[in-house]
Length: 264
Image (tube, rainbow, N blue to C red):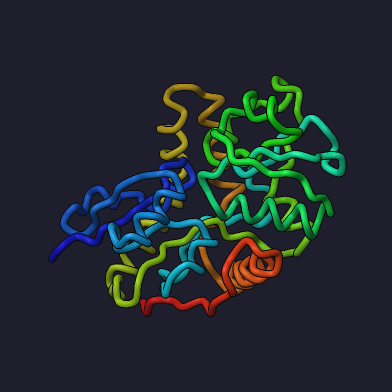
């Protein structure tokens, strides 16, 4: 059987979802990239399933692997604005464009929650360089996790917490997505089993991420265990639908689509 080609995100938050897949090269061929690249590979047909930013689901006739996501129910720690001004006074915003979902979430919060209309500009995730160009900066993933707001003299505004405050719902950042028929029920169950195994080994994943640094290991475990969710149940799906609807309403996404799930 030809292995299923998987495009996964290269950040720490993905590790629980792909735990143990490398032990099955006959079943899964996994490559790692930033979120936007994972989406591009799926759109181009270069992977069968992509762990793609949630907004990218709207760009094709796609299906979702059931009950797996990267989500948060409040503070997420790795999707944040860093600002030297109160958010109500922010007039310019530099955006890390490695995830279109985080960019869309930022635009939604600006329009619907903070009621501001900043000028936005794309930027590489270098906080000091971003803040030389703009009042505030969106940084995501491991770079955001590593920034010390006190050292940089900024306020960190966690976008997972802001979404929860605005909607009362979890936020889904990414999920396994592919075209119709790309994943069999057996393969869906194998991906769910990998997630379950990863969740059972969060301490081991955090230890590897720490690389011998006890404080980084501790922070990694808190992040993986306390900030993230890895399922995609009814309440996460409700949050995902609302996100799609608001993104379309403010013009940063195509019209919402029904969420279609592979049989498992």
